[in-house]
Length: 199
Image (cartoon, rainbow, N blue to C red; front, side):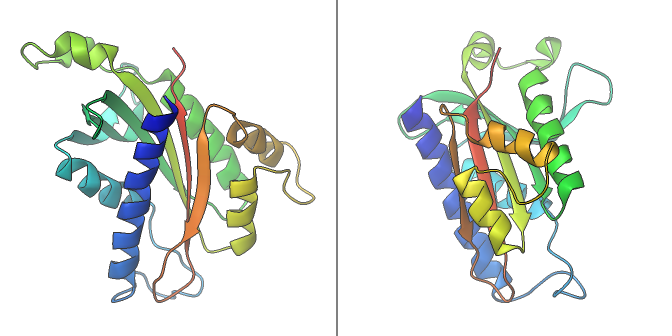
């Protein structure tokens, strides 16, 4: 499973580098010193990497529960021919409230189930349901100390509760967690946490 998680990490980093190239040419929000770009950019660039590998991607995919969605669902095979299902949530991280929302995203991914009756892939239905299920939390931050904290998975500053709980999730030994800076017109860091989804 570790190799699979690291393959996914490579896709995130490649997509992030491509996004950084685009952001070095144009920053798509007003008041850039105060406003980060939207987190949907992360899922778009990861989605591009997945499409190049032949994955089927489904932005804003519905859960079996009413009003339940995840930012991106993807089915396909990694380079090692390992069939996987990827469940992706993305956020901007700039305060404790967003830390709480990331925790909610983590739970949403673990609870997410495909709608069995909507699987229409002739001959592949069983394979989709038996794939290795991988959760991905992506985040953007303009704060260098948040990026360092995320990668180190340590308690964050004077804050407690949500920060500590998020830190516990990030320090999961079965996960790959990291961050990297984007080279663009303004400071921005991509944070990621890749983990096996628990049944």
